Length: 112
Length: 184
Image (cartoon, rainbow over all chains, first blue to last red; front, top):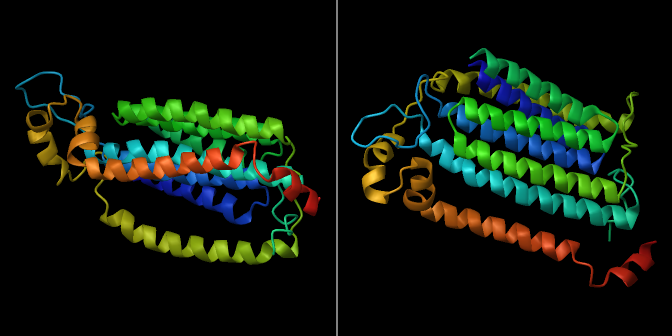
């Protein structure tokens, strides 16, 4: 139960950064933290006490594996997280080039 | 499993540092520490594939952050200790969300299987027939590339779209010169 609660705390920390921080880089870090929290929660849900990683090493013997399905789902999600983070960072860099600040309250000229 | 709890605490502490520190480069490095803690946690919960991918992705993410920050500015000028009127509405909304989130999560956590004993209703079949049907000894790979290959195609499309977006935004040629002049 404690690992799940730690994941939820990390999720709330990331959301705090997104909602209350004014610096764009901090907001992107908040997105990354939320993504880590969800990935970690999935991996924790699939964990089985005393089991081994889901890789078959000995044929014909029944081995005790952890749940491979959450791991398969998270595997692609991690890579996509990197791609979206890179996209957000590219936006942030262009915004800085134009407005010379990362402060979202200073970027008011976006309006028409 | 004491190392798991130590790592969780270190991860949360690094997350707080990453959000609150004034220097943006230090914030990016702290975010890297969160990511590497996640990678080690993946190893502890028997997910070596995830750990490998997480380490590679985390290195790339910190490099991207460092590249952007070194090209722009280190300093987070928005860090301030006093409370301004502008912060009240988001803070109140965030507080309301946290209350609702905690209320929902207390009931969700009661429904979730206990940590260390998953349901494995779907995965049990994959474990039983995975090797014979897909020929892959690594069952995670068997699921990604065989049983759930359509999911993987969809995710590849998302990945491709994001990469195309990055390349479109960061390329040097385009209408940058005159568009920048107008608003300067």
